[in-house]
Image 1 (cartoon, one colour):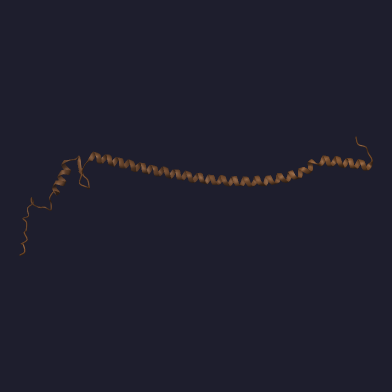
Image 2: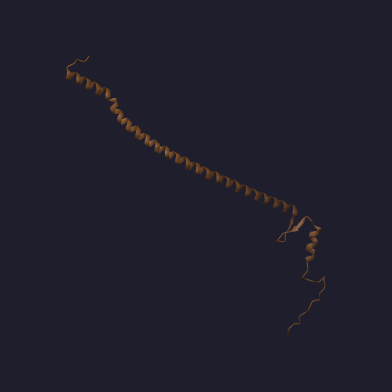
Length: 137
């Protein structure tokens, strides 16, 4: 036979639904030092404050590092732009140097004829003297 369902008597002292609920709020009001964490372990509020302080310091440090990293990235970008500009200037200077070297080489080729002019003039003078029969000293 089936057992008869038993209906428990409802009294505020015997209520399982509210068991410990009033104690939770009473303990919060009475003990300012201790709080309950999510896992149910008791923690000291001073320790919690220290942990929160350390966490805020870590967050501040992380933000500071990110800002510093951002500044360094900006500096790196600026330095790279300056390097590219300097390289372009250097390339233009090298091109100009090559042009000047070609010009100087062309002048040196012409100068070799100029350096030989005194010898050519002397030989022409001797030749003219021979043709005219003049003695040279």
